[in-house]
Image (tube, rainbow, N blue to C red; front, side, top):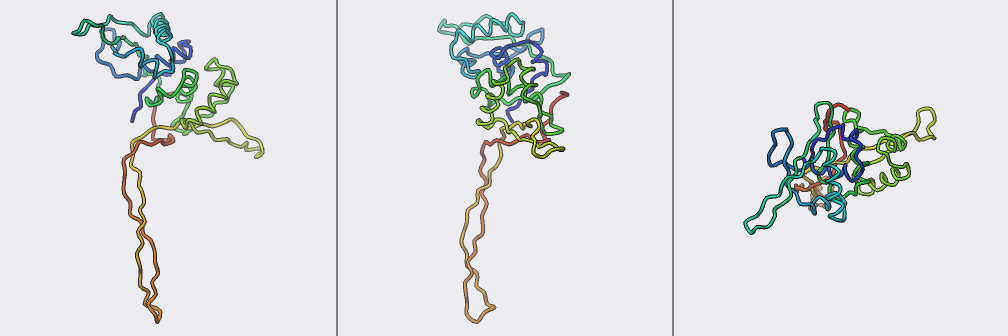
Length: 244
């Protein structure tokens, strides 16, 4: 699985959509080494950051990294020189938030598919998802208040995530009045490598000797072949995370 952990405290930092998207992407990358203070050193191109976080220009990426440096979450390191005397890949010391007091699981494969606005909503739904109840029931007003986005933007973004098949929405009816719908419920769609069983039909003949004349009753049986594919599956109680 391509899941990694993010601390629940990421929404308490006061980051905007671009900063949160870039910081989450940096936390998803494997670290080369660690510093004495516990920060993880990560090498990545600014063009890769922009492509995976939905940022079009390198100037925007540099500005976001500069703001994260002011938040003391990212520390740019001096670039090493190659053998041809050209500067190498950018290196950053990333301070990851502790996951002891609570974390949620994040999918690496969504990077490169979402813009910062969509990433914030997706992160919040992943944080709010309960693996015990296998559900997430936050209202539009609650999501708007927690993320700082307008209610209209939240509705539009959730609709886009559903069209991209990253989340699944189900509407629940009220127990008192079945004609009235209550808050929306969401399921997080995960990526997993599994085996897809494909059926191949073969036609065989069977001779029925219970009648005077021999009649042939044709029937088909199926042979299963397994193919390894990367598919999406709706989250279930098998997914675990820390305390909400």
